[in-house]
Amino acid sequence: MLDICLLGTGGMMPLPYRYLTSLMARCGGSNLLIDCGEGTQVAIKKKSWSPKPIDVICFTHYHADHISGLPGLLLTLGNCERHEPIHMIGPKGLERVVSALRVIAPELPFEIIFHEITKEEQEFKFAKIPYKIEAFKLNHNVLCYGYKLSIERLAKFDAQKAKEKDIPLKYWNRLQHGESIEEEGVIYTPDMVMGEARKGISVCYATDSRPVKNIEKYAKDTDLFICEGMYGEEENNAKQYKHMTMYEAAEIAAKANTKEMWLTHYSPSMIKPEEYMDKVRQIFPKAKAAKDLWTLELEYEDE
Image (cartoon, rainbow, N blue to C red; front, side, top):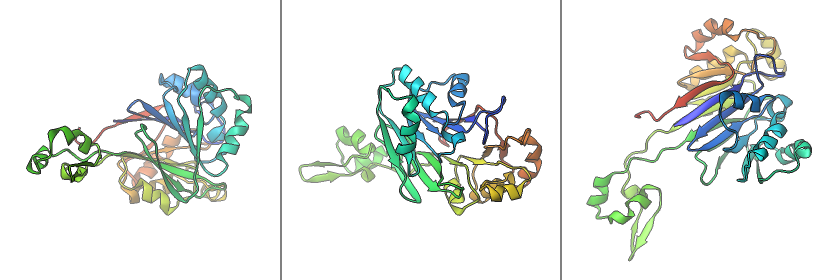
């Protein structure tokens, strides 16, 4: 199971009723954060979730509305007696930017491990952390990346296959978890006991950007697609500032065949995003105008 909470849906500046951009995922006791705008830790507290299990923080880019909440969050994690390392992923300059912000949070009881994205598309996986993280380049006025989070699922164990191949019972569990075993010149491999692959859970997150093919590619067939819809009508502003309109986001969602789309990262001038949704849903019926603290529990299809 994967829990998703959109902590903040605002762009540019916080408003009394809208925090800045941030998303938290929870799976198997490990939390992941994408962006950390001002108000992020207040939103976490309001949601009654804990920041302590955050193992990974991903940054789309280094505009203030996406990272200005980081120093306070790091101090809070330190005060929570967090000691395990935290992985940070982001575009080129990640360590330099975070180190500058840490001038006001210099003493931390945990290590920060930096992973700068060096390619247009790059995958990250960490031991004991359940997420497969795929970063993909966007088209903003600074270097910017979107992310796809996947919870992969093991194929179903086939006991009948194992029996037919006379595989010792003591090796079944190890083979099921991907280990190959050699005994007295005989090699046992996971494919000898596993059935067909099973669909996992996936979420795509894209902000800030003009429409690009990469977004459609990574949003393809996802369980949830979270995309910026900064403007309702101002297409010229979207092009000038390298953002998207709600309708452009809906067109991507329709092509990607995602199960559901949440719009986010609204312009401060957009007071009521829902006013635009009738027209947006004509393009993609499963589009929603997200609000702060929206949460979704995603489960495997057959559970």
